[in-house]
Structures are given as C-alpha cells and as structure tokens.
Length: 176
Image (cartoon, rainbow, N blue to C red; front, top):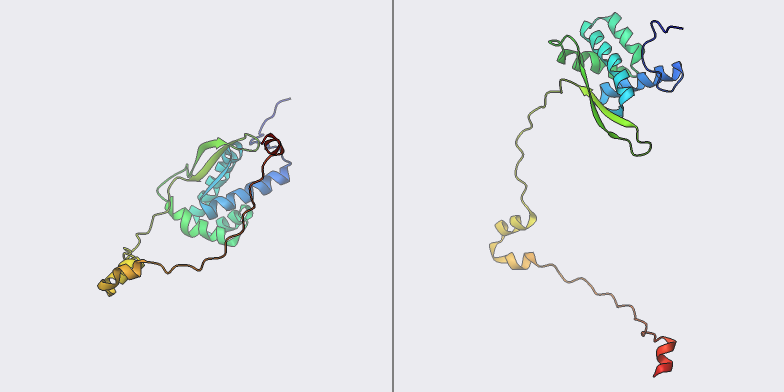
C-alpha cells in the first residue's frame, strides 16, 4: 500500500485535535510573535504560518476570510493584515524560523522556538531623566543636615524571649 498525497505529521492526535492545535499555535505566534513548542509542532506550524502571511500580503476581503478560518481571534487577524504582512512585502517566502532550543524537563522532548524572521522595528524611547536618590535630594536641599538625614531613628526594642537553661546529659550528671 502506497501513501500518496499524505502530507504532514500526525503529532499523536486525531485529525480534529491536530487542526485545533495548529489554529491555537498560529494564533499564539501572531499575537506573541515568538513561541516555544516541540520541534515537530514548530515544523508543522511553519507551513501554516507562512501561508497566513501570504494571505495577509494579498490584503483583500477573501484573503481575510480564508485567514480567519485558521486564526482564533479577530484581533490576531487584524494584526496579521495591518502589522505582520506589511513587514514581509519585500520577501517572497520563508517568513518564519525554527531554532532548536533544549529538551523539555518533564519528558525530554526536544523543543524549539519559532519566530518571525523580520522582527518588529523597535521604537526609540525618549531619553529618561536621571532619577535622584532621596539622600542626594536631601543633600541638595539642606547641606548642613547631611549626618542627621542619613541616620535612622532607633527602632523600639521588644523584650527578648527567655532562654532555657542548657540541659546536661544524664551520663554527664552521673559522672560528676
């Protein structure tokens, strides 16, 4: 018996469970832009994620409806069409990368990180003002009170618990 036109991995699941798993993984990849999963799942997800970017690059209503079949939330579909797909306009394929990561602690399964090839452009943050410590602010306010400001008021002392007298061993008491 020859298995013609049978593609993809079974991933130890029934067909419906595998489809649901892939939908959840592609939605998570779109939302978080980087996820950790097993190597087999990542390789299977790579095909679906690349297909979603191709639909996002088309940008029409029909493509959005086709993408919504495999993506769980409307927010993720919007992010795919508005943020992710425009990043890959110059690229004609290979939108994801699979990096082998480590073996999972519980069962030793090999894991991988799957992420988009083109990272989101980092927005430059405005230079932050230097935060001054409380002590340096007090020094500037009152230079003569440096020593008094640096010391803390002594805390109230609580009465110490009584210690029990050390016990002698019975053998020592008889020996003396």
